[in-house]
Length: 432
Ligand SMILES: *Cc1c(COP(=O)(O)O)cnc(C)c1O
Image 1 (cartoon, rainbow, N blue to C red):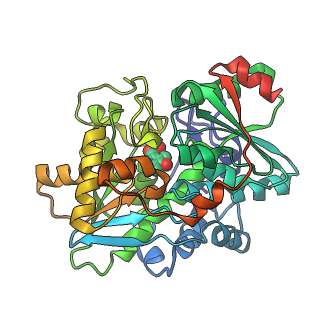
Image 2 (image 1 turned 90 degrees about the vertical axis):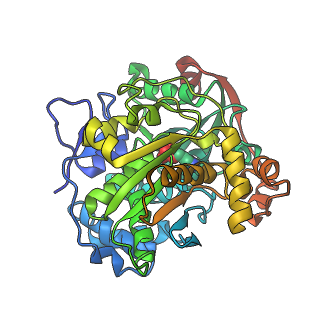
């Protein structure tokens, strides 16, 4: 049976998945990590016909002692009910499009699955929860959308005012049943700090708070699935034993999920961690920063990656340690200018429109190849739909981005939002 312990617990006390999922953050402020990672035969996911089938096989293994297969199957099918295509750009370069869910970013995979898993356990327990979520853009809308309308779950969203794109903001403040949105006068780090403080505040201890940030293990497991699904789609590639994955990174949840997929048995030669000007992790990988030498957040064009102190670093570091991380993961920092340049090059070379986050990845993988000459086929994650970032797309390409019906519809829906200061008391006033 797979159990979870907190990254900060020297005794490694173990809890069930159900508890790790419903708590989010461990009581000592640490993040839950699995005590064991099931090793799977690749044919477990290579026989799958869609990502939901990957999910049923793989999550089935992780959760088999807590959720019977007959209960898990409908949860996974309902959560992962949208496509996840691998698009070929050249003979050895592919993008995995993770933006075909309802809010058009990869966050839909984790959020939708986690919402349904939580609802499953809460119903059984006859309990309710308030999900507190700090978002740098895409998490909030995915979580709001994934959880909306569940009668035992309420959602409270915090996002940094003025630091998300107009479309992202619109997605965040769209009225949904059971969802309240707050524009915080501060940065994403402030939002994340307020959430963390709320969890340990004695005056809020009576509230059934839970988190949905990528600190929640319930989001990471479903994200591991698309790495396996991508590798399966590449199966016909002649030299596709091992692959490289390039991961546009911020809070490092997506990279952590990829590493889980690799530890489960998917051969991965190298991960490329593509960061914007928030460069702690590439510095760390190059030996130019010590663990936890974080920086304040810098605002960039790839705003969902604007994270100065990535929470999931604690998980990566606990599970792998510095040496292994530095061997397995190659990192680089991509400026705004290089991001726009790569969006333009990608359009010119492949007739492909990449969102700024995806472009950070494509620039990073190009540098990696140039520097190492590594011929391993590479899958670069396409994290969000370019239509979410119309300003960046028109700046880079000199033309309008294609319109998405889902986004157009957003503007006809009613909104709700309140502005609050970047302090715990301001948040408490709203919660109490
Ligand atoms: C969240 C997000 C990222 C960063 O992912 P992490 O898991 O925080 O590293 C990158 N791109 C987009 C579009 C995102 O929404």
